[in-house]
Image 1 (cartoon, rainbow, N blue to C red):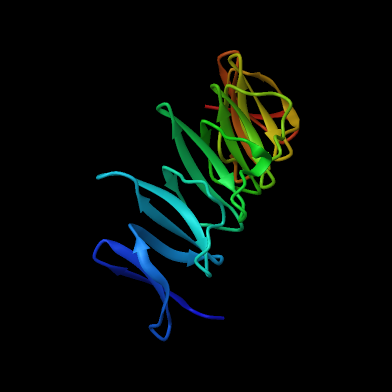
Image 2: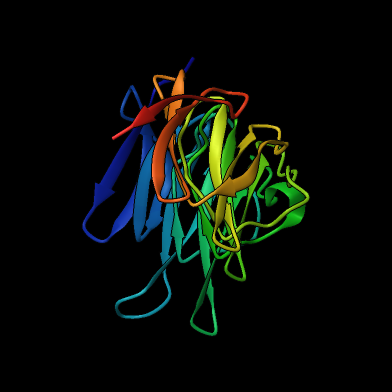
Length: 207
């Protein structure tokens, strides 16, 4: 496999191979190292502005889209941002440049256990790496971590969903924390704190 190196000269960037031969000419305002066969590059669109895009190792665009911010590819996906009329829209794109699920969101988290949180119009849900929306319910909040179960909040009540988006412990608590060491979780009910198991059964009191 050919090793690719980043090469930057003055305000123009390109790519050389490990023998030092110029393979992709100096032409970009920003270049980043290749990741999974794709490199993030930047094109100057104004005196102080740059739009980002992606090229393959032949120097070809993976798509014609340009972004206001962009991440490296990791496990086949890259997080990107577009700003339209002052509103930031986010998506994960695949290696063809298509947003997974064909959707853009106002906020997105990082993937953990194959899912991530997304926010649209102030409500939250989970999506998988194919962009599928996993829950039928859009919540007021979803805590990002918690092992097999995630804390969700809706209309002032807390419960737990699994990584398939299924409601496992109903919305019934006044507050709730993620599962500690994936064994028990601390919840508040009627002004008292308790520990529950994965079935939502109270197993102990908590101070």
